[in-house]
Length: 88
Image (cartoon, rainbow, N blue to C red; front, side, top):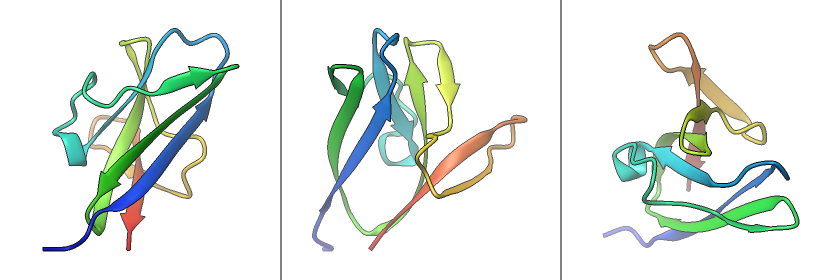
Protein backbone atom coordinates (compact mmCIF):
# COMPACT_ATOMS: atom_id res chain seq x y z
CA UNK A 1 0.00 0.00 0.00
CA UNK A 2 1.26 3.48 -0.85
CA UNK A 3 2.19 5.74 2.03
CA UNK A 4 -0.01 8.75 2.58
CA UNK A 5 1.34 12.23 1.93
CA UNK A 6 0.07 15.22 3.95
CA UNK A 7 -1.45 17.76 1.53
CA UNK A 8 -2.15 21.28 2.79
CA UNK A 9 -5.05 23.24 1.36
CA UNK A 10 -5.17 27.02 1.94
CA UNK A 11 -7.63 29.70 0.95
CA UNK A 12 -7.92 33.35 1.97
CA UNK A 13 -11.40 34.77 2.47
CA UNK A 14 -12.04 36.98 5.51
CA UNK A 15 -15.80 37.10 4.78
CA UNK A 16 -16.43 33.33 4.63
CA UNK A 17 -18.14 31.64 7.56
CA UNK A 18 -17.10 28.12 6.50
CA UNK A 19 -14.78 26.65 3.85
CA UNK A 20 -14.66 22.92 3.07
CA UNK A 21 -12.88 20.84 0.43
CA UNK A 22 -15.00 18.50 -1.71
CA UNK A 23 -13.27 16.19 -4.14
CA UNK A 24 -12.69 12.83 -5.66
CA UNK A 25 -10.77 11.79 -2.51
CA UNK A 26 -13.90 12.17 -0.29
CA UNK A 27 -16.70 11.28 -2.73
CA UNK A 28 -17.43 15.01 -3.22
CA UNK A 29 -18.65 15.40 0.37
CA UNK A 30 -19.16 19.09 1.07
CA UNK A 31 -18.93 18.61 4.86
CA UNK A 32 -16.31 15.93 5.59
CA UNK A 33 -13.16 18.06 5.13
CA UNK A 34 -13.73 21.56 6.52
CA UNK A 35 -10.92 24.02 7.07
CA UNK A 36 -9.87 25.94 10.18
CA UNK A 37 -9.73 29.73 9.98
CA UNK A 38 -7.26 32.21 11.48
CA UNK A 39 -7.45 35.88 10.47
CA UNK A 40 -9.18 35.10 7.19
CA UNK A 41 -6.76 32.33 6.17
CA UNK A 42 -8.46 28.96 5.93
CA UNK A 43 -6.32 25.81 6.04
CA UNK A 44 -6.57 22.05 6.23
CA UNK A 45 -4.09 19.19 5.99
CA UNK A 46 -5.38 15.96 4.41
CA UNK A 47 -3.35 12.74 4.15
CA UNK A 48 -3.68 11.38 0.60
CA UNK A 49 -2.15 8.44 -1.21
CA UNK A 50 -0.25 9.27 -4.40
CA UNK A 51 -2.57 9.88 -7.33
CA UNK A 52 -4.56 12.45 -9.27
CA UNK A 53 -7.50 14.16 -7.60
CA UNK A 54 -10.12 16.72 -8.62
CA UNK A 55 -11.54 19.07 -5.99
CA UNK A 56 -13.33 22.36 -5.32
CA UNK A 57 -13.78 24.66 -2.36
CA UNK A 58 -17.26 24.84 -0.86
CA UNK A 59 -17.80 28.31 0.58
CA UNK A 60 -20.53 28.71 3.23
CA UNK A 61 -22.17 25.45 2.13
CA UNK A 62 -23.47 26.81 -1.17
CA UNK A 63 -20.79 28.18 -3.50
CA UNK A 64 -18.59 25.54 -5.17
CA UNK A 65 -15.45 27.20 -6.56
CA UNK A 66 -12.15 26.03 -8.02
CA UNK A 67 -9.17 26.72 -5.78
CA UNK A 68 -7.62 30.04 -6.92
CA UNK A 69 -4.23 28.75 -5.72
CA UNK A 70 -4.32 25.56 -7.80
CA UNK A 71 -1.93 25.27 -10.73
CA UNK A 72 -4.09 22.81 -12.68
CA UNK A 73 -7.80 22.76 -13.45
CA UNK A 74 -10.14 21.07 -15.90
CA UNK A 75 -13.76 21.18 -17.03
CA UNK A 76 -16.10 19.52 -14.58
CA UNK A 77 -18.76 18.55 -17.15
CA UNK A 78 -21.27 20.97 -15.58
CA UNK A 79 -20.14 24.21 -17.26
CA UNK A 80 -17.52 24.92 -14.58
CA UNK A 81 -14.01 24.00 -13.47
CA UNK A 82 -12.51 21.64 -10.92
CA UNK A 83 -9.05 22.11 -9.49
CA UNK A 84 -6.64 19.24 -10.08
CA UNK A 85 -4.12 17.99 -7.53
CA UNK A 86 -1.36 15.50 -8.31
CA UNK A 87 0.12 13.81 -5.24
CA UNK A 88 3.49 12.10 -5.79
